Image 1 (cartoon, helix red, strand yellow):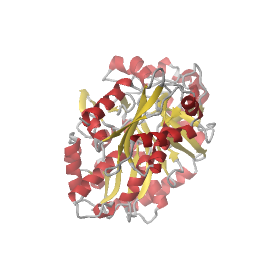
Image 2: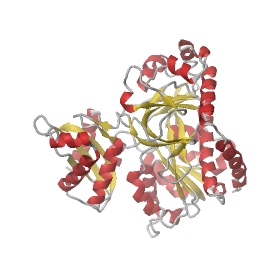
Image 3: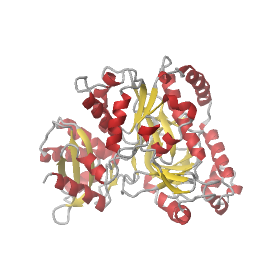
Image 4: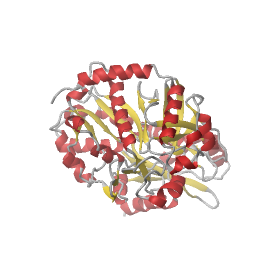
Length: 506
């Protein structure tokens, strides 16, 4: 295999200089106006006066915030699956199927050719940041292993295909990049996730893997499969991929998985790098140490707005952008993109850390709140409480989900379904007490409702090993970009999980 790292070094030197010189507000405003001009003759552009937009303020005055459901109902569904000159010029060739984490409902996200190019550039930026942190890298002397969905896309109409975004990306890998890409097309095509993970794991052991990317939960499944193939080897990634330099993760909060990854990476010289890719676009990449935030990609087809979460459903919520978003504040992230999403409420809650260069942390979802009884718990508080309670009880959590359910009498409570690391055990009542105590410390509203008698102690369902994997398989959500929902406010989805957990114990 040819070592293409010298080419990366040349590109990274040029791109790094470009990034260092960026003025965030100027770059973002120019990008927005370019997007608007390009889409001025689409149906959406004509309906919203794109031809007359000259500034960010003009855009915000003429284009209201919209969620997916609004776009689907008013613009995409009437012409589905052929979206031609509707919200973006030309025919949309791909539709990314979202994981439907919160409700389980499938969403179709338009992916234009411009967005495919933007995603490729973002992937290169990931390597740029790796090079800037490790100048002696030889990352392109081996293969980049993307653990993603199947490339067996569904033909929706002539020239229109749907599937997992990672599968779409794999299909569109350019010819020049394929020597450094893994898995090979015949393996990437496999739709059966369990068969695919077995074959890919075996093939990867014969491949010089220097970079590995995927969703943390499915990466851990891969690691376990590797250990099963070589049971005599130490349970460390260096045993299987001795040349691994970079492990890229994203899609979910990494904190619940951090301890387990640390064990797998022991003795390895690979660095962790978090990324923020969504089906709607590639948003940010960690350019510093973990938990120092991810640097927003300013010049790659996405315009960002930030709306205070508490005001998101107001008639006219305040809309900030790179020029005036407040560091330290939490916002609902809003995107306008080169795939025809305009003032689109993504559903993620981010915390702006810096404005120049702009960095953020993903701290939850707009739907990842528990407030069935007025307790106003955020996803960040829930995840933190679960991890700290587990530490107190000296156990390790593999996966968990939580939702509201009736308690005693008129009171309510939360029910947690928690899968522990194999070999770990704890009394559910003791775990519930520790978790409840931490939630009371973190959130005043929760504490007031517990002390005031409106809420009961949480109910704990300690799941058998592998329960969440089996539940995701039963829902057809195994592998790829699918993620276990942390907070479930959808009654039917919560009942599905509880029924599955109950049945598994019979």
